[in-house]
Image 1 (cartoon, rainbow over the protein chains, first blue to last red):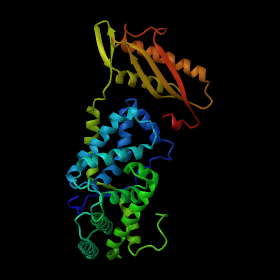
Image 2 (image 1 turned 90 degrees about the vertical axis):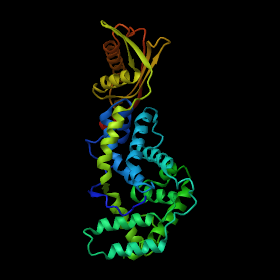
Image 3 (image 1 turned 120 degrees about the horizontal axis):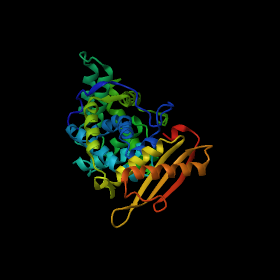
Image 4 (image 1 turned 180 degrees about the vertical axis):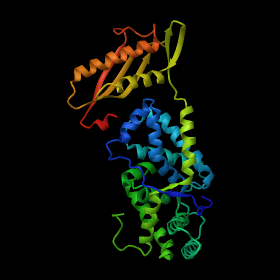
Length: 207
Length: 157
């Protein structure tokens, strides 16, 4: 992500639930089954339900924001082709995030060196967060806060960043995150603990 | 999040607020990406075995994927029944020689009747699709497998 402070807002909306409570909305399981049997309307519903989350996730993991659209397109193309063999061993949502993880891996130059830290300086991020908070020209505190978060996320190595996004933003369970990242729940806990500490430290100046 | 450790760090509240904000935020990029996603999926080809058919104008080949799609539509049109999985088997000449249809039915349905109805619908739709090369009902193996009985109609469709 080369420019994390790009204002990509179009507005806020509630995330479509993976398991909708409304009697009119088919469950993910039903949509996946119908899409697997060639129902393109069902597939479009899957895209609408999960696309924003996958786009949001990929945007914050890729080095180049220009890759995000192609990446998400590849994810859903893989999903369309793979749905006939999707057996439901995991939830549809977890499966889609796993495909996204592979698509991001394929594009990211930094990701393979997962143990290394990004070349971003904490003091620099703290200064920029402070500037964002103090800027009287800001029209929206919410937008500025998300920009500050994006700055702070650059401090995290890719796996910590991925784990934090999946847990705190997308609200996956620990076992689901472990499946997406191909690791254990114990490892996920460690990634989250370190990631939270770094992010909280970077955002202290927001208060 | 409710699993945050007790001695929270000073920036934890800010971090939680930022996470909440991001969670309900749809990025502008998604609006344009969505159209591309659907277009690429629409043009995408799922690898699929060929199935031979013959109508009055001659012989043709149809992808098994298309056969599956049409059978799914026919089965899903039945009340309280939904196709869960459909597979086609062809012989060395690409003639259809077997179809397996796994269905879910609503709790309370009479299962033998549901299976007979599904089988009849599948045979009829195959005749429409494949014409003269549609296997006669006794020659094609139409296996109807009631794989699930659901209590909520939302689990069907």
